[in-house]
Length: 483
Image (cartoon, rainbow, N blue to C red):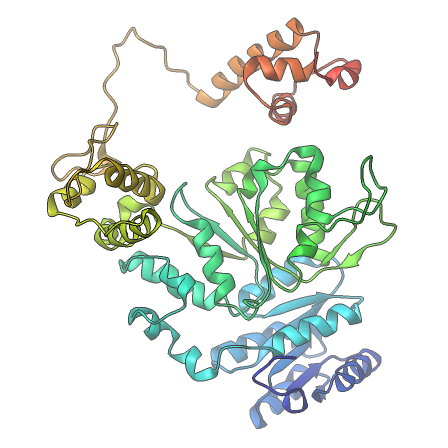
């Protein structure tokens, strides 16, 4: 095992009031080469902690004189080095989430799988970052000598410094992270930085775009499949969870995941076990989950499009990436970094960025955030004839003077131009429902044909039918083949 703490020197404190379980944990850890101390109560554990330092504290959630949560809070308040692993009752997702929010490194559910137990403890003991480097990491970020993944998050505005500091903090634990922000703000860069700053950096980061996978393939893509489990399956196939074993699974656009798959994902995250298609038994998995979305998941939960229990499971720690319009002081540094990359890819000298170009960019809404900024610079580099960069006018009307994006107002409408409904969403749903029903009737309720006629995928069509509660004949399931 690669670790700064040799196995023979790794100190572990086991806290559990059940003698049999305490003995089982001790023997398992001793066989792995760790040094083990045991306590049967919160008070006894605190006494041991006051006398010496440990590398890992394993604690049951419920103890005779209190909760294991008290130990976590004490360790965090005293800024001690111990990483805490909580053991909680089967299915107590709320307890697990609460412990992660309190600062626990990871959690296990009873009955404890010893193979998973050993893997989690080994992960907690491993720490590729020396203590001195940990203490100075925030300073190294400011001096420009930080991790390469963090350096790709360009900008020193207050909000971006807070994002970077939060990344460094959350990287230390196994707590699930939800990255939110508008499209083009750099959510995948944040996920990369969390992974690269964590003890899992030596293992894989598997990025998944949940909106790009056909619904019929989701289960096989996520959990894998055994040979012969479906037509054309000639060998065992690993899914995303297996591919990310020991590393990080990044679920981008998690808000687009269908409800049926949300339920299966929730179980996999809670129980740390998956069942590949065609397999008679589940298998343990060891991954950290980072998810991202540009949607308001709380609103999606209220609308019934996203499971509330999965939302709370994923949103243990949230990192909100500010839009570019809220950190315009980062524009010069962003432009320079993007131009260096564009010039390197094109094999040309880095173009000069004039004050006039920066001024023009600062007045553009940049609704597409960093992604739109990069596209504008790409086009400017491609079309410029001279050394100085010449930015083409934006397709949209840029902002002028001191006005900001948030203060722009639409052109006023004539009173007789449109009737404003009292409930816009209900009005739009009603119109959409009528259009879908008409398209279904005209295609004999063949959803594939109706979807094609409306420019939708079959998955999108099924989702809308379910959301709008449109009744279809039972035979329509059979008639979904293309006509």
